Image (cartoon, rainbow, N blue to C red; front, side, top):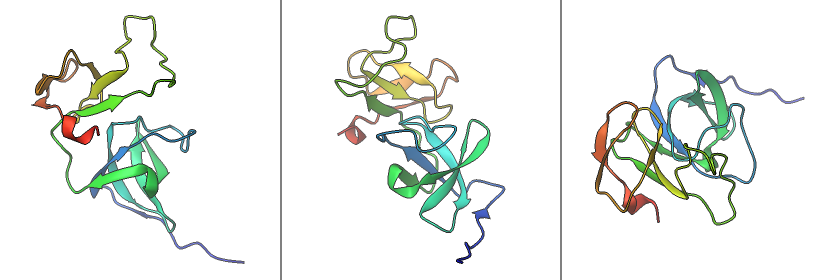
Length: 134
């Protein structure tokens, strides 16, 4: 029988992590691709503890980009050619490419290739990080 070392969890964020696409859901609730989440600690394995929709969730480190501080630029998310778009055909459809606000994680429409963007939800103003979108 093996013992698992305890999980280390802080009461304040120790860093920030952005989730990237995976083949299937790996946590409940599922982190959204491109959104930044507060990191509160790590488990004994290769997982970080994130706060996702008010809950602490362990997510594999290999699915995350981690930074010391919350970024100020918008993340550009481009859906794949065959990737499901749950909002397709509705007023909420943002198309294949959209921006995620670094402050409130809301999705924002992109028209053309803007350099700056103002979030429709929280009013955050920042650069659009096209250089990170590959």
